[in-house]
Amino acid sequence: MATDPLGRQALSVTFTRDTGSPSYTHEFLDPRTGAMLSRAGYAPGSSGGDILIYTARTPETGWTAQRPLLPKSCETR
Image 1 (cartoon, rainbow, N blue to C red):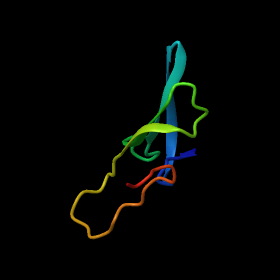
Image 2: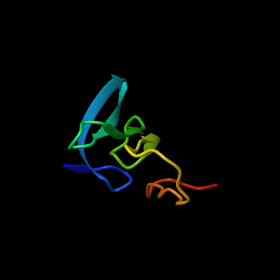
Image 3: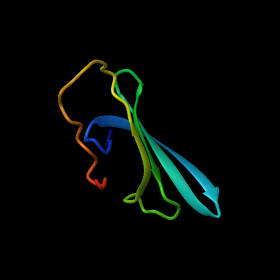
């Protein structure tokens, strides 16, 4: 088991691309349904702390008044 950047329990699958300096993507899957919860892409040469791109999905749909929780590594401007 792994934890996605939003703190959800997930299965993690890693895809690596070697273009001179390897970069990789983690896909986090819901362990009950197999649906993708999120995807985090890391910069080439990163040791796992520098997220270059991040996409989160939720299985729930509908309106809410709650603000989303940002991953710890996100900067707000």
